Length: 371
Image (cartoon, rainbow, N blue to C red; front, side, top):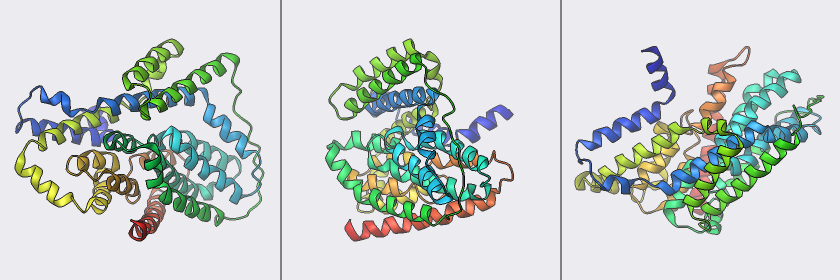
């Protein structure tokens, strides 16, 4: 029973989405239509990217890059800028989750080595905001972007231009916060934990080629089933243990929500009522929904009742700011901070909420000005 309760607590969003899907079945009997609910295009691309990023992270590629960048830091300010911007820039291509899984433990180790534990909360919170905001620029930066981009039929240029102003303002604000951290001189002798052997270099090159293949499938140049099949076959040859790493609970959450939305849309009264609430209020609705159920489920749920996908893109990306569950990636950082000595969880949540609300207010104001 304890194991079951622990699993439910860990995968609460997936369990709730499963209950919603089951409940909807009582109103819409099982049938062939159920298969049409599921967006296999998004699921295959997302799984391919998860596999590739897990392979590169296992090889230590991102840590090696980060270590080399830190070799030139000489004070708290420059150290903070590097640690925060690593999350911001990498999240655009390796997803916000992978950026935090890679660079938050990295930051904890670096700050401990430099005797700067008092900066842990500030730096980790800024890293989390950076990953959530940097990832909004690209279709592959986070799961809701990948799903909404696939659904919208938008061109890549159109997508980038839509979110570029919010990304630039986010970059400026994050840089300002990092600069204000302090100028205390430090000495960080951070050498890469290891070097890639020849075999690992070949694996890394293979994963990079698979990443490019995934990008081509996102751009609709290569059929998604071809990209997914090649990725799976390649990883089975390279290192099949990597197949244990993807977040399969997230993929199942997508499936359960697809079923729930598909069924709800076939109930005329509920469908009409939800459309009347959401249409014209996509930004605010998606921001508020994200605070309660996180931005990935919010994007999937709301997309079933509005055609204004650009508004959902902006709203769910901004909605990742706010509460600790607004973006599930934020829980990754909180979990890592909870493993540190002398942790102060209440202080962390206070700083996290305050800074997130400030960033949310700034970006929502930007939307009001240019939207």
